[in-house]
Image 1 (cartoon, rainbow, N blue to C red):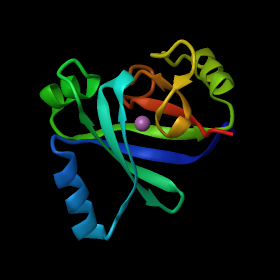
Image 2 (image 1 turned 135 degrees about the vertical axis):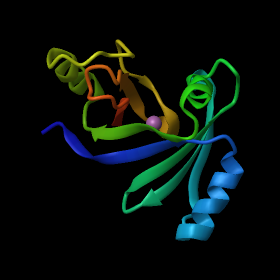
Image 3 (image 1 turned 90 degrees about the vertical axis):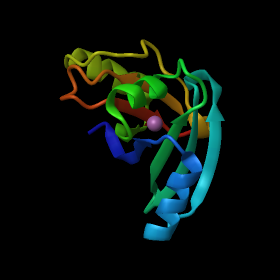
Length: 135
Ligand code: CO
């Protein structure tokens, strides 16, 4: 088994502060990490739930993939992050099983993680992010 936990569930939102406020009022959830990820054109807020995270994500520029997603699909579930011990070997296993890599090689993600995305096509309509924690 290559997966060690659900790392995060990512929800695309138009207004990050409003979404954070809703999660605080509805669930008492507090932000434990907030980061602008320039490379991906997003700002994220992480809310910890039992060692996993809800990740609220919003675009920081019009050419962000999350901006495209919001235009096409509206707000909602964007991707699921699967925690792995070794992103590179997990990515190889996914591709060998017929998954389509978006990232051919693992690359830096938020929080100092090493990540790779796998296309929804071939993964039952779900965008998957493989997430390796920093050592
Ligand atoms: Co993610």
